Amino acid sequence: MADEPFGFEGGTRITVRLGYDSVYAQHAFGRVRLGLGTINEAGLTGLPVAGGGFYRVGQFAAADNAAMYETAFGPEQSAGFDLSAKFDGKGWAFDARIAEGASVALSDGVGVDYVAREVFAPSAREVELSLGSDDGIRVFVNGEAVFENRVDRGVAPDQDRATVRLAAGPNTVVFKIVNTGGPSGFYARSVEDEAVLPHGMVPAILAGPARRAGLMAGAVEAWRTRFSPSYRALSEEIAAQEGEIAALDAEIPRTMVMKELPMPRETFVLSRGLYDHPDPERPVGRAVPTALGSLTADMPRDRLGLAEWMVGGENPLTARVTVNRLWEMLFGYGIVRTSEDFGYQGEWPSHPELLDWLAVEFRESGWDVQHMLRLMVTSGAYRQSARVRPEAQEVDPDNRLLAYFPRQRLPAEQIRDQALYVGVCWWSGWAGRA
Image (cartoon, rainbow, N blue to C red):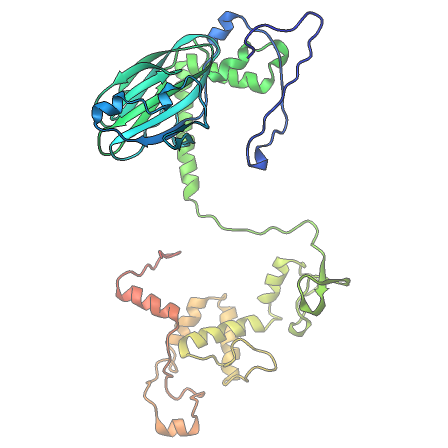
């Protein structure tokens, strides 16, 4: 907003420089729309005050309570807002917690904190402030004291009202919070002026070409909220219900999902197995290792096809490997002792027919793990005595024939579960508590 009229009839060239001071690349200006126009004094009076962020400096000490109020530590004396200024070695720091209408804690203990912001007034005017503090408070505008309340209290909204005079243009408002003991706090907000437009309605006074549809929609919404009690009540009800929906949505468990690409990513044989040395002359498609079989012609070449192949009747490995691991969990070792290797270099199963029968039972039961565990723990082999029989040990030193129940050490997970169960901390529901 220019300090005085400028330009001449027939055209004026204006140069605008945009400052970019953020350290974040995402904050760079994308698209900027700039419009020029004129506004009369009445229009300026109707424009709202624009306030910057809140900055804080402190804590400062004094000899006694009276001295804390009377001593000027420096921040209150400046007519301009200089963020680089130092006061007894202390400087202004932005405090994102402080906002209009929010009670925030300041420094604990006896001392003085300062909170300040710069506000821009389109025209000279009086503004009413609603204040709260722990404990006392003094207010300075452009270096001049305009309000004071020496009191011992806890901070709360709307404890004081102060009317301050702002000059046209930038103004520095400084709040001096005097804490006489315990925690300290601050609260401030501008009281709404019916003669001033809400921020959302400002686009309504723009010149015709500058009245974009999006801006005008926001202006209409602001007008309805300001002047229609029924609309405001409905908006508040909708906002409350949307908040409930958001809270409910936040309680819904989330899980990661995967989605197939429209075109599979090109894959190549890795030279010498090095992941960063693919051989572009040896492309490979989606398939299973030849030694394990192949996907049938009707199976899709994706994760669904792989899942169908794993549980299909032509693949004997999935069921066998799974029941062998269940057996190992209960008996200490599997029917195939090398449970990690079912290939040619693995150990031959001690009971091949039993392994086949368990695999078929697992598949025909609908891959029911609980059914298989129940079947195993109620079997005669599992319920045998753990007493070692010398005659059986002489014939079968490794007890591969299960003449007696093998003693075993529980894995760490089972030891933890047993400790939780004995300590009455066990959670039997899904997704148990940690």
